[in-house]
Length: 193
Length: 203
Image (cartoon, rainbow over all chains, first blue to last red; front, side, top):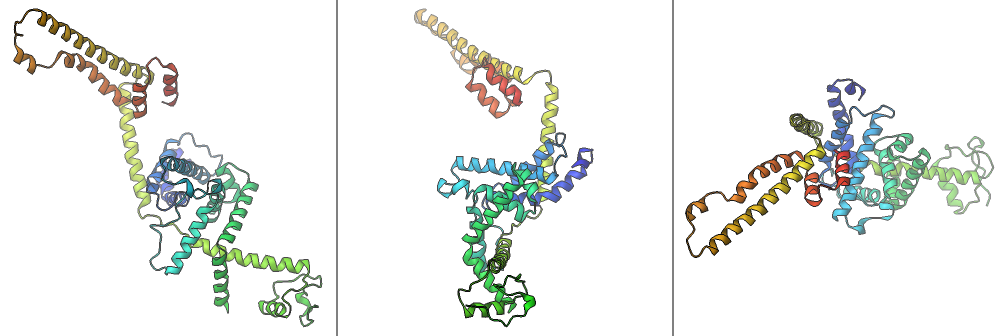
């Protein structure tokens, strides 16, 4: 980013190469796989980066700043979706959960067995049911590898709060997915014996 | 029950106060639990068992979470760059067009558009009034047919001619405005300073 600010235009291409996939994945996890405008939103995220070239200050990591933009846009998009009625209120859980559609239309691996497909859907559904704050923290931590401090910067919270959110998210998932967790444990034992 | 005394002391004994190390095998644990389903374990032993179970569950949960992958569309970065290039080119074009009318601030342009619309409306009203006036004059003139009726039908109406310059201005100036501004223009009076101030700030 600093190279780009210094006038090296090729640095921006590198930024897009490096982060467009991550931004797409983030938006997918926040908005759901059936959301039609994810790729356009990736473009919008980088358009904002482009327009903020002169305003960017390296007080935080670039990825933190980028994820903040993507998160804000996905929250706005979710609110717009509610406004349009694209997601019924019945689908909203406590604390704004279930903002995304757990169904995947593009990532199902054809080699997966039906049982594996069911497990994937169950996992996505369980994540989608999490309250929004827990889901955001879990996704950034588990799937994007952000440390607690960085997640706290992205969502504007404290490191301690993030740690608590992730803990609660995992506890909820452990309960929701208990039958699958037990199956995993059994298959692990079968594999080792 | 008391615990069987067949474990080597270096592993520690559940309930004897010594740390229970992970070396305590699953088979030994199964054997132990088989002898007593409700063993009187020490707090440390219970904690160790719970921690071990939780660690295994955590690992199983992580394996499940790993199933949730996102397929990144191929060529995404190239398409994003292409779209950004187009967007920036369009922006540059708009900027260069703005350079042609740099001296007209956004607020003034709004006034101009508003003024043009008002002028167009006034011209239309005036033309209609004048036409009505001339028609009534002819009517009161007593039965004489209007001259050059066919020519009058072919020629552009007075209203239309009066509107032309105003419409050209409106067309040009509306092109300069955002859709929101254009909508706002038709919703609000141009004297609405608060709205114009807001548009100035956002512009």
